[in-house]
Amino acid sequence: MSKPSSDTRTDRVTVPVRVRYAECDPMQIAHHASYPVWMEIGRTELLRAQGANYRDCEASGVFFAVARMNIRYKKPACYDDELELLVIGLPCAGVKVEHLYELRRGEELLMTAETTIVCVTAEGRAVPVPKGLLP
Image (cartoon, rainbow, N blue to C red):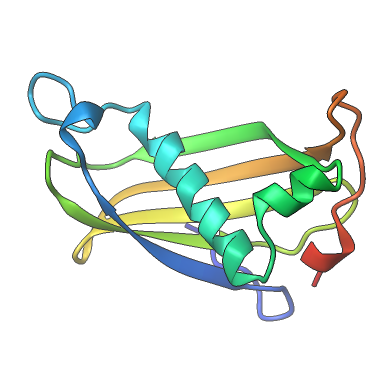
């Protein structure tokens, strides 16, 4: 995962994840569709750590839509694994917010990912990132 340069905002949070049975395939390997859910949990916790939350943003008419998601699966996560998800919020401007992710089991890197989130109205029209989320 590329690290933000020293002149950029590097808000980050680490979120614990335990792989649940329902998130696994018959071989007890975490299904690939579970990873975006964990990433959403991480973004929610990062937003909370920044002093905001999705509920208040939505109440003010700003919603977050995933415009781009890139996941690199490196090693499988398995049932009952205790993992740590690092989420890094990059500098945001205009209508988009970008995040980087690393999922680890101890020192072992299992996944890296990037997302671009676009702020939209309930009708789907792009709107500027709320001022409280800007660096």
